[in-house]
Length: 565
Image (cartoon, rainbow, N blue to C red):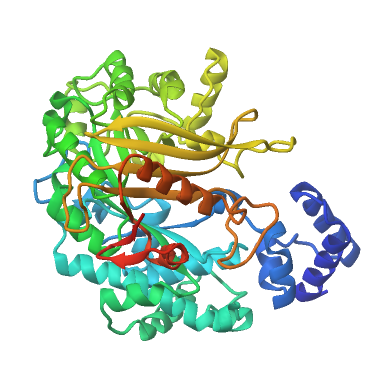
């Protein structure tokens, strides 16, 4: 029995059993293998790759692997920049960088993280990285036409402007070229896709990788950022969000304006601490005052902010860490939209490792880190999303510190023991949190002060079951930093509807993405602004979402979508 005939037989059985879950599908594959004398049970990926196009499209969702990847409605695309030195020197906690124990690596990475390994294989070429990642999404059954790009590898605004523009231009160009090549008439040409990437085949083979990279680089060519951003507005694969990592001292007005031009919509801001002492001790290169200044500027420009916070830094004890996390939400100078909490790890080749060996630094333990995080989970407001609680660094690359890569499981266990329930965005989002009851969805508005301005978190929620279906972040800025802003201008910093990713222009009855929630959230934000005597609305929109806002009367003004209300 050939793989193609096996795939067809499996999909025929799935067609006859529409309610069969993943466990049932696994048992069905075993039965088919026994019936046809197949010794090795094919993976879901092998089934998809050996399926005719009509079957692949029909059963993609039921066979897709790692469904969490697109639960939030978008496909994340993490891209790694090339190794480079930081202008201020090196933080004592930072692994990676030039001449690290693992060779030249991007700042703060070891080479063992999945995104770093993909970057190394692609020689850190953004064009190749995008092609490779989009290939992986398609072969695992995921729709990747709404892409959330994350530029990783250190403080991106500290790189030369030429490097930054070239990197971002090639991200957009890769999405556009991939769209044109494999989605003629906006439908996936699965046979052309399989032929180009030599699938099915030895996906890990070095020779195949060289051949694929050669073909990809022949497509690369030259272009400009403005040209590729314009192309992406109507491409099949669109950039709905672009995230850039930076330190607060490289996150002021000049850097903010440059990021806006690049199409950036979210900033990962490495504030690391709310205390000056550890920032100085680890040679971070910025102060708490810099943190607050950067936060205010970036919010007033419209960016979404994801704070990076580190537990167990030098000079900080457990109680200070707990109070520090809580102050992020009680002190209006902070109040992040998202947060990543990392325990401080002792890494080879770092200044902190030298202090550790001399007995001058005692790293935080797994137990203490889990205790701190579980304690503060109930303090995270409903407008904030906890993105992760640990770096994506395998513990075999560390010298000392947290000894588990699944810290989140320890946190969840302690939360249950303490009776603490998290109500952050991630814990409540539709698609991740399921309910068997028919949802009673209501429009909720939460108002709070932040960085001198006024924030409105507007959300569609099933209050009884605590499920979040979508939200909008509206801000009345504290100051006008660009010509697009008048004293009566409000800005929408985020509009997001949850549910597993569905194609642009298509429908999925099980997803909340196309139930009109976005339109209603936008209208509510405009009404709140008008009620408060604001007569102009700006939206910081991903390049690939501009067409959506045009449907509601918005026009492009500088980097924003703009409308008089």
